[in-house]
Length: 170
Ligand SMILES: CC(C)(COP(=O)(O)OP(=O)(O)OC[C@H]1O[C@@H](n2cnc3c(N)ncnc32)[C@H](O)[C@@H]1OP(=O)(O)O)[C@@H](O)C(=O)NCCC(=O)NCCS
Image (cartoon, rainbow, N blue to C red):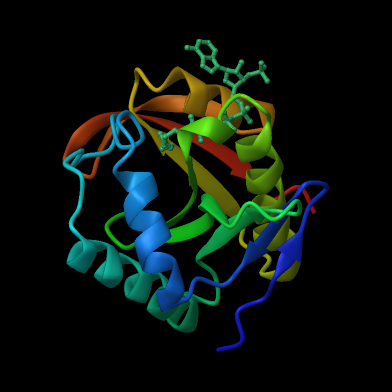
């Protein structure tokens, strides 16, 4: 499919390509970036290659997925942001991950707002969830800032998580 490209005030959200494998591998190797993920081991290049291919396939299957994120000032890849289908619960999740030098500047919130907007206005998804490790305070804050409300603790990806939710306001 033709994966759309979005622009926010500071960011470009574009389709992933296999050219992103090495930069993404470097980002996922930064200590702390995967701290709150179910598997926080730094992935090898092969696993990152499969991850990127899975994202491209995900777009074809569900009409949405993660975008590769760059700044408009020519950063190259700084992370991902976008929507993912959770087959076990039949839900759509907003997610994001950025290289550490880009934390704390509002970029996750900026990109995730664009992802929510895409899901609600273009795809008419009825509701979107945020699933986060209880101690991932920065991510919880992002979800709150973009309008999700805390629901409950629930098990996702084999771990206890906090579940947030926003209903389509349109
Ligand atoms: C989570 C993550 C995407 C946040 O990105 P970011 O661009 O720094 O997020 P933002 O700047 O938009 O917002 C972060 C908010 O959390 C707050 N915050 C960050 N760390 C905090 C802490 N330890 N305690 C309290 N608040 C904290 C920030 O102050 C900010 O809130 P504010 O705007 O009200 O001040 C980034 O830390 C990251 O990539 N982490 C690794 C991957 C990850 O965990 N992804 C989420 C999986 S669910």
